[in-house]
Length: 222
Image: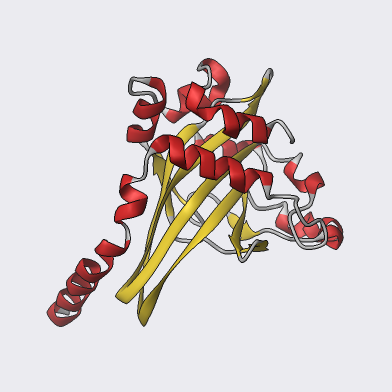
């Protein structure tokens, strides 16, 4: 047991250097990257996310750079933004962090864009909390893709959240079960000049920050 804990600690120390860019990236830069991810959601209708699915979503979460790495212990880390539908349109963005880990004897690293759609009120209620576990506190499923996917979404739509990753310009459904999604207090302070809870922002009580103009513009497509 002690041996495994020692190995895990060493693995964690090895993978930590993989994440400094994600941890220190400038908030306006992440907002711009998130806007670019949103703009690409339906760029290739035959292979990407059905518009009909996007228009049903209560909220959207965009993590423009989820970094994964593993050396004995796997880990994921990413910072992004969430927005929810309100009576007056999409809410201002709220900062989020995605964090997760898994044990596995593997060596490697990767970086990808991640998009999550919150599909019902129950999932939205989870997003308004300061922290929850995907696949634990909130049900999550890999989202369907392509024009023909709309007819296959009945089973997927029973999940509170549908998740996608984007690599080589194409979106694909991905499972993020086991990861934790939490508020990013630092990003909120960067955008709004003070500490704000995500619930305050996502309920529509806060005006978007100037740095979020591209992000909000991309959301208006949907």
